[in-house]
Length: 184
Image (cartoon, rainbow, N blue to C red; front, side, top):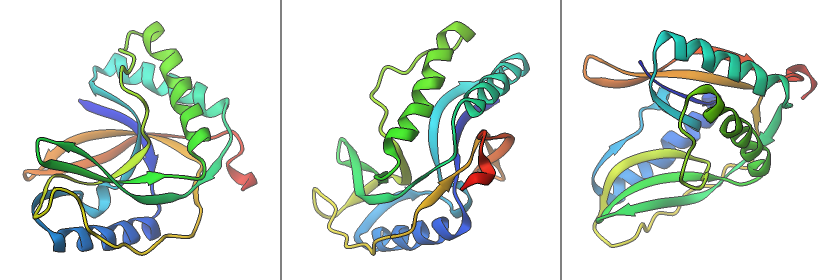
């Protein structure tokens, strides 16, 4: 199974991201845009995992969630990674970024001792809007509405990344709430 650990987003946030996606699609002539149900924030991409790996990951999630508290975050402006004229377009995380990074770092500390590879790239928390997006210009020229509400982060989710009828689907297979979920 191909898996990753992430943060699920509420429907209201997904509706906002879907509006942003439609605005970007109007100025792009090509791209693979994230499906409504697939919007999330990745904490740790794992890749292929065995059933034994899944047990270990669930234990790691339990440990991290039990040692962290719920928090809020907010999304900020659009950003992109430009790879040979094709863009990976994303919404960045603003408020709550340090707390999210703390959760990421807790996983990174556990990775190697549990047989997983540590990440070599800098942690850049974001929500992917689309991949391989090509614009008529070298850069994006898209005005988007702001989202002024806090997003509650109260649990971790282990997602299974797979295809159903040739459509990429992220299915939650395990969830663990942070130690103070009911306090927010």
